[in-house]
Image (cartoon, rainbow, N blue to C red; front, top):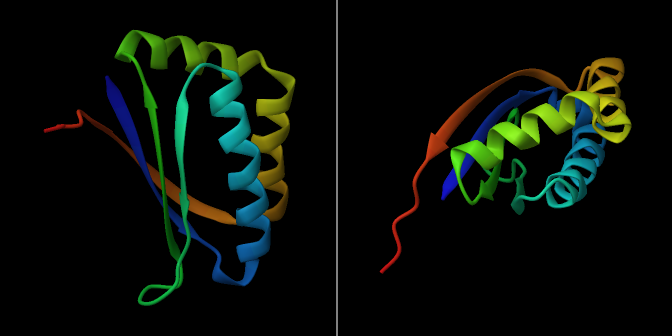
Length: 101
């Protein structure tokens, strides 16, 4: 199992746009075989930082998701939405292996 952790630097004046972006990707990750654990928006503290977590059964499954997303019209529209609104300034991606009791 592999969990992807995304850290976003967002435009805090465009939280509604970023929220819309996140809602789109929750559905798209699920559509393409992953389990999305949600987007985590600023509340207290830094107002320009948000996070997302989603899981795939393996790194190979994640790589298949990336290939599928590159040609999926809905995924491309979501990427374009972020570019058009400028709600994301930058992001970082980390790969994590969860530990369960």
